[in-house]
Image 1 (tube, one colour):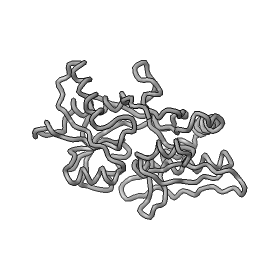
Image 2 (cartoon, one colour):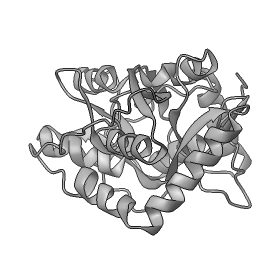
Image 3 (tube, helix red, strand yellow):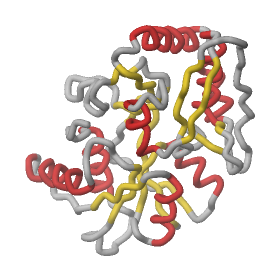
Image 4 (cartoon, one colour):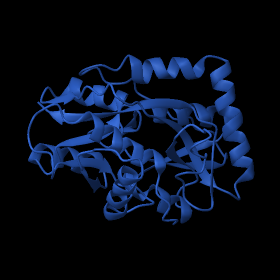
Length: 275
């Protein structure tokens, strides 16, 4: 695995530093919880942030990152006071707040950063890459992607669970194995009984239907996605990248030996704290 630091991740930390936590307490030792980054340790992450601050002469309060393997452990860290805030996506934050009044989304009106969601697969899976890209373009063109987004993200509020997802089955067909973590509800979601649900699950069900292939869902922690893919335990994993720009390349944060699909969804990064 490359030890190349994700530029977006650094900017995400800087955003929090510039904004602050909305109170007047001493933030010199404040910590921010994040799902584990696969290409940088907490120390490397922190050192890079300090370098950015020095390079651009930014007067920023230092927030030390704490990495977690999954969402449950990150929320436990927030509840226990191990971290002051956690970083996630706007739709995830809204879902957490709607289902637990002790959380609130921090107001962050200084900087805005957006991740693009896609599939990652091994470089040698050329046909799979072509099939997935074609699928994403098709569902965007025919309105299916907009419908799934509405049903499984926009309309999921409070205790209103997302609709159930029925996986297709074709006798004798090939099977695609896809990892689901449950760490980004209602995007990547696993119900209390262990049943995969949410937007990504609906998306892969549609993928199976259109490719006439069976889909096997493998439940793993977010931090295990890359290793699951590289070991052939799964064929596809969900990944998040910053949209391509002149500053940040498309491969700024991805495992070696993988390729990324066309993005299918974008989400803004926000921060959540306890009330």
